[in-house]
Length: 303
Ligand code: HEM
Image (cartoon, rainbow, N blue to C red):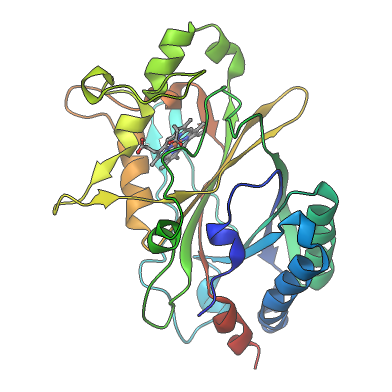
């Protein structure tokens, strides 16, 4: 089974993110359209070899049964929303998610136009955002994002289902975060570093005993009952206009459980009252759960 290239892609310079809802009665047409997506991904990658294009389409938890009633990936459930006073991670379901990435903005934009043409009259565009690489892969808070991501072949081990009818597919969680940079920039660099548990300029991880219990990297490094690391592959990128900015957070994993446990640990306080202090400086405005099937699986459903 061939995974869609966008799941394990190495970081790019540019991205477009699109989310759609399927129009009433258009499920058969959308099913046929999605069967053509893998050949669109191949065509774009081959036409612009210098652009390192990768595409990804994923189907939302609510839309899945209306498109593909015969089989459903285990664990495809609604986005695990969080609410702790003002700190919230809402659920905002969408039917389809597209991640279009390239090292050339024009090529990513061509991909947007092709996807829009493919779904014209069948689905309504509900969300669009452009993502970009900031400096050496930093988030707009100024910290390098992605350092502890799985590397090399381990990316596929973490992100892709290895066996079963959905082998080569991935559970995808997407959140649109808006940062409060005014509040963030009022803090000293040392206080900012404590929020992540890493240094800012040099991107060095704090020693374990030096990491506050509220540090983002402490709250999201989790182990299961057997002592194995619970990993995800993050494909997030910054977004921004002159007046507002944030992160499109994207998690790809062979199980939805790791993301769910991490988000829980970021928002819910432990018995000592500690939660992830990053959630004091950025607000999630969307949260959606999707499954990105393997290319052959998508193609077969159009037959
Ligand atoms: C680590 C930024 C949301 C999971 C990091 C790091 C940064 C960062 C700068 C440290 C470097 C690295 O290893 O990548 C952000 C920002 C977020 C955000 C700006 C939101 C605006 C999330 C969410 C999750 C998550 C929602 C999962 C639910 C992780 C994990 C690590 C990490 C697993 C690696 C921890 C480790 O092993 O050290 N993040 N993150 N992040 N983040 Fe986030």
